[in-house]
Length: 266
Image (cartoon, rainbow, N blue to C red; front, side, top):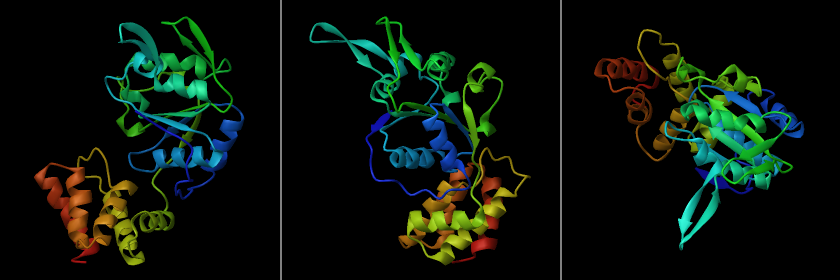
């Protein structure tokens, strides 16, 4: 979990009207649900918009053990006294910050129930352990995200949760935008960015290999950074893309063949 104060606006290349949607949702005091594959820019988008709107950002990376108490807070013992300590969600509500719950479906089921009164017209956070009914400060916004590709019967949002949010779907950027992102984020040459985007398009078309994920924009940026630092492009692609996507030797060989065909020995 991390909290970050307002900073310079991070680089973000818009894919469409998502920035306008975010601004209107914030102005209308509506919560936002962002759906999209891993590494497509969801977190960077939220960071960009928080800075653009001049709001502090509280980010929580959700996981299997994340409970409602982890978000709201708990009593701690210190110096012989019992003291209440706010969790990240409570801090964001008090401060009027943007609270971003990344991959919210990974959290325990009791976590999403806590969000319900914050995600409707009430905009309140009941803190049962202190008896406080905390009204969200002006500027507060709740943003959650998840990867629909991981959804199953055990890890999905209930309709009662989903229908409280305005929804935004992000995908991998169009080639021209993705090239500009890779180059801007890595400092690589335009030619390298072009080859990496071509590689990503080839890998994303593969349908005969059992991959949980495909080549994301994030992985392209990592490969580009290695190449910009002096590593041969094919080796950079192997380290940052192929070996990051699979542990299966046969699948790795198949992906490596695609890499060789697209980037050669660059």
